[in-house]
Length: 490
Image 1 (tube, rainbow, N blue to C red):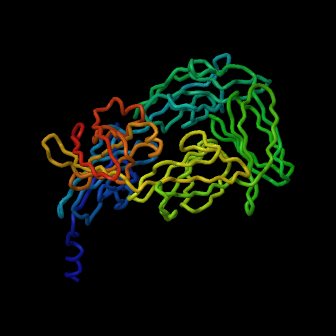
Image 2: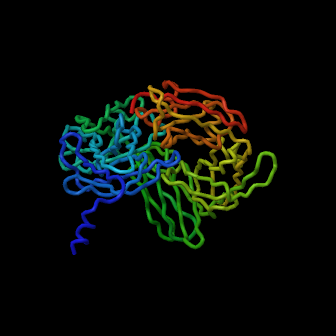
Image 3: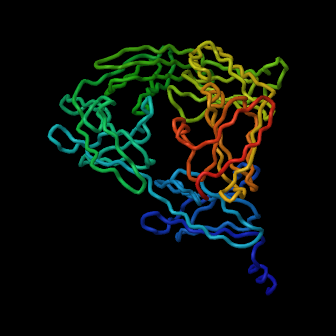
């Protein structure tokens, strides 16, 4: 019995990582926060596991091996907190652990921001049950990111907002007595150009955002799905999605619609799915439309080597994201396969084996941009990924001000030429390994900008021109070494 108790008391091998999660403003422990730990291995972050904090906000990871780790925590209504991050959305700094010992970490969770105010009628009394939407300023077309509904006093609150500038706008509504209210921005305007922006910060509510919706005539959309089967009709606009289940006669009716651009999508059948899709611009009064159901469009993915040498198409993966009507998830299609898709506008991105790079796309006939296409019912489309076998490799070390390598440093890469950025489907990023070394494989030849920093989050396209970056020209089938000076500190 004594031997058994001694074994229980014997410390586990490896390092122990203990910590606590606190609310940023109050300093109170945050119970049931999800704490995640990742190990940096070969430039990638590999999940070690995640646990919930106890009632005292405490957590513990045991039996950890030596290496560099990334620690983060989150809970609903709060921004993700990362150990060592310099900004709310910045990359966290790694925790470097030895083969044995103990490390303690404190993470503070800031609350996400909010917008609050009143929805008022013509006599400045509160309007109950009125929808209000938040849009991130600077994005075109407008995309609703969060919404709320006014209470019995007309008070609304839209929570869970990341820091930044937003527009607040009421939704359309038909009131009792026949009075109609148009979608109205904060600033008392139905036009975006005259709307006032709202600054949102963490741990704060932007209050006093009062809106009196302007009167006007709303629109209505009526129509019929042609096909003789029950269907689901989805209507998309910048206030989100409305949905209706229609019977076999196909009739549908959407009322209280604000003026603007819409996408309408009808889907029917399970064994043999069919669909219809239209773009519409609605104004005042009633608009009628019909939606004839047709076979879902299909896209076949092919791959070719630029020199004509055959390549196994299964080694190429294509991601198709529907941009209109908008959805968050992508459809994954392996080379050589054919996928049936709901109709709409799509954006393509591809991943090639490391010994190749994406040279170009040969898009379907309805292509509008280099990596975008439109898929309509009955279409049988073919998307070809052109590969080249002469990729460039970019490698180097991230060095601190004292010249020492920085393990786990974030490295951000972006193509300077717009056409090349399109082929890469945006920038790339990775973590330096335990020795501060980074490697980008499978890069197309061209000009690139890159930097490393714990203080700067993943930059948006327009921000690259404002950063102190290193630039380099990569040639086909060449490996180039470029050491980077860490911007800022750990």
